[in-house]
Length: 240
Image 1 (cartoon, rainbow, N blue to C red):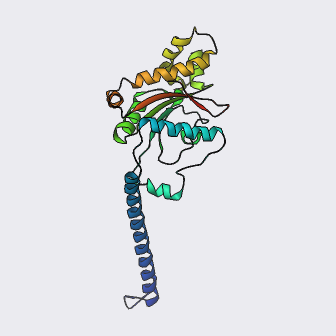
Image 2: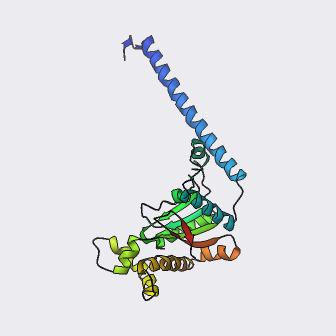
Image 3: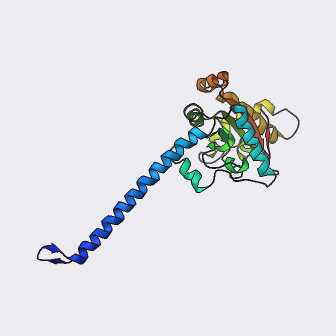
């Protein structure tokens, strides 16, 4: 910066003025964004009626039908939607699903940003951490529907059926699935497919140990269902 007799030169003063103006503009833009985002979140909560558990399930079912029929609508994926949920979230469903890359809940149910509270872990098991996340969604965010979603040819289920030593921490989920294996190991049919369904039911039973969830079940403000995703067709079948 040039100086003359201890004073800032006129050209430099203009530069500083320009920088200051830009800074003020940026700050104002950020403020406007925050205000609009907050207003959008408030209007969203006020304008969107709360879904009943059955209506929330129907919304998931219809979305999966669109996906399986290759007619997705890609709802709630616009720039406006990003702004709308920037300050608050109001998901209508919580889904405990496998971490398998082929079973992303928003895609297979044709939903968008802020619609589904995802809890994903190999084998869709109800670990304490998963349960805590689910309780947060149900109690604090008010989601009326909880789905435990398994899928065919699940690697975690296969590992539990084989029950062999695995390296590192990979096999930590096996123990949580073994009770489901015991239940159906003598049943006719494909053992892995049988365990996939049995595991969904077993994990639901584990979740039912939560007092917070059972209170909402008893009040009618929550519905818990189990689903099985077909990797070949993209369809979800309600099995529990």
